[in-house]
Structures are given as structure tokens and as C-alpha cells.
Length: 219
Image (cartoon, rainbow, N blue to C red):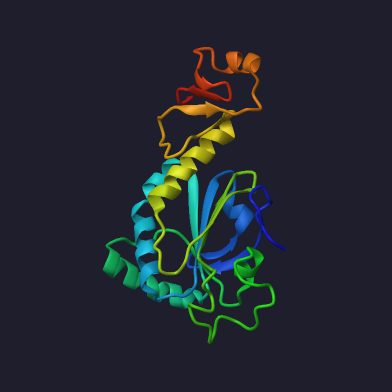
């Protein structure tokens, strides 16, 4: 069954580099980034795992946990982690799910549910669609989905930017404009009529068009 933004994120139990994880229990009341990889010991993914390790303090400030997935065993993940630390200068400090049975990849609609067998004998190209990012909220709902080609390294600065927007707009009745960054003006959502907007945003707003009501970043 296909997953969409707003759907309940599938729960699962899996072996990881930090032991057995029951996903919902591990998530608790936090936000989470689940990001996946088609194969261990691949060059682009090696850089991604290292970059995310360096950015972990930024995710922690946002009360966002990080969990990785690769369609290989936990033992391979642990060996790969040594290469990542050596080449990227950062220790992998978040759990990596071992998914050699392809269970979680299928659960999150990253592989066709009829994909046969296990990770053994499958190449990165066979698992090309297992290069996704999911942002999952404390309510266990999917807030964002991104899937990248194998040749394009993911931009985690953009994922942080999107996380800032999602967390802000989850709390306030606002949306964020193109290329928005934290601290910049936001837009009152159309479902908030002017009377309600005056109560929520007593400082007022600027409106180049009636449906485009800009206010300062709420706090």
C-alpha cells in the first residue's frame, strides 16, 4: 500500500547498530528523520552518513531523532561505520537499521512489495529506490517524503530547513514561502480568516494580495 504525507508512519521492530528498536517506543514524543540507503560501502551514502553525523547537534536542538536504514546486515553496518568515521571525520552517532530481509524497505513503500528474496545478491541498483527521507512527527504521522537518485547526494541543510518549517507550521497556523529560512517572515494560511488572524497576529500583517498575508516569524 502506498504511503502519503499525513499517513500514519508504519511501526516496526528491527535490529540496529544500537540493539533492538521498537520504532514507536524509540520515537516517543520527539520528531524523527528516517533516511535509507540502497547498499553499504557505497560512496555517495558514505558521505551522507558522515554529513548527518556532523549535523546531529542541529537535529537534537530541534528535538528530532535520526535513524538510518540500509538494505544490509547490522554487522556490515558496523564495519561500514568505521570507514565513514575514517573518511568523513565523523562517528556515526545514531542507529542504523539492518534490513537484509527488506522488511522495513517494503513497509515504507521503498521497494515493490513483491520484491523477492533478501538483500543477499541484490546490488545497489536493484535497491535504487531505497534512497528516501521521511520526516515523522510526534503524532507518528508522515510529514515529508523525499526520494533521491543514487547519483545525487542529499542536502541535509535543506532537510533541516524543511524541518524548521514543518515544526513551525505544526505549531502555528502559518505556511512558509519559497526559500524561507528560520527567522524570516511567514504567511498566514488561507483557512484563517481576517477576524481570527487579528486575534492570532495582533501586530498585523502586510498583504500585497488579499490571499498573501505576511507576518513576522511567530515565537
